[in-house]
Length: 439
Image (cartoon, rainbow, N blue to C red):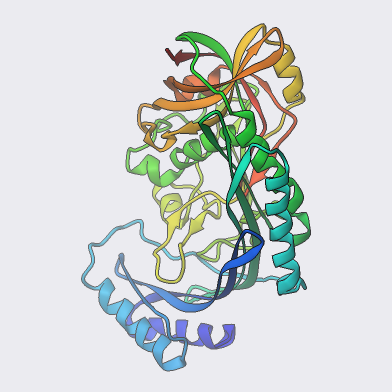
């Protein structure tokens, strides 16, 4: 089916007493895994589906199908309308208004299967050869995906675009004197050429080897450097509670905080669905609303939540283009696009040099347990002890505890080394004092 045919079906909804939105996705994907310089697993998938929302007197219904024939889509529309009739009404239910957006057709990079496999084997070799203490490269994988998306509604939405991404990861195991450590490195990008397979292998091995011999430190309060990968993990938790949906459900510590200070003046958080080469960049969101650049926290001040059409209508503002679906079978949620902490001017090396005694955190465990309402957290962590401006030894078996707002407010330096890990990214952050529970 094409966009014109989908639009024609959507326009029949008013004759059936409803408004309707039709979301169609076709996708293809490839995943590879290698082990000991041999292809261990390969999986190719082609999927398709249609998800339809129908609005009848304030009642929203949903139905989906994996069949894209005209007859099936028409049947699914009628099913969505019938489902709407038995749901609870909500005065804020809405389907977005007219918007026509046709994006350029993307294709996957012209890279042969053999080249992809060779690059994976290169990553595995570089990890294994990095250091004699690397005893095993546990996992090495690659995947790519291309999705074609079409959205049409009775309200005048017509959108069509394609989206692609490429990802790779390496997980290495180091061992010395009975001590075993793991290191994982990964990348998710929009351009195959930007995956540096050699670096992924070496980075994975370095992470594992550098943690050998790690042990706890004494309990104390120290300035802490959050490695940019850890800072990104923290941002992903903060991103969840910057959602207008979380605020409406009273599951966000940022409820009623618009216009107030929630972080250090050095912290600016941006969600940008238009970011060049962003993994989540698209011309529209999954409701057909144009994506945009939204400053959520500006120099420490909470300036906006991100919205889909429902949350925007409920709060009396415009959608920020953050309506998201997990696929045709999923209903519309509210999620970030490309979200990141704006970089500063300080290098990680300068941060380390500035500390007489401190801790650089390179990994945390249990971040998902942070309380979204209070912001309190207590996390297992590992990293490196800093003394006299030098990394002196690896640290493991400690817990860091605090509060998300307090952590963000205590940031005293923001790194210049922003890196996107898929659709989220952050630079290195220096936090002035966190409680460390150790031995």
